[in-house]
Length: 59
Image 1 (cartoon, rainbow, N blue to C red):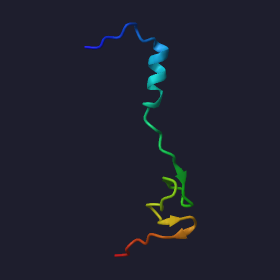
Image 2 (image 1 turned 90 degrees about the vertical axis):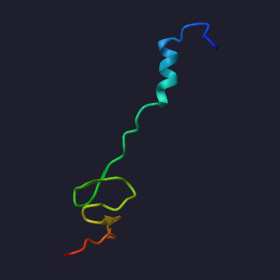
Image 3 (image 1 turned 120 degrees about the vertical axis):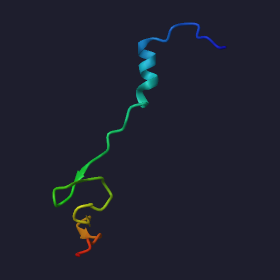
Image 4 (image 1 turned 30 degrees about the horizontal axis):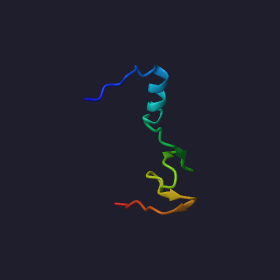
């Protein structure tokens, strides 16, 4: 079995792990004030780029 010849320093270990973090999602705010993901229609009002795209059923 392969065994490391020298101890890996905290700096080298940290540099290797620098890309392993959890990405924080980008949040934008709709005209109605609801937080939403960019490039997607608002789940509350259905607007995207100032136009109505999703229509809620009125029952």
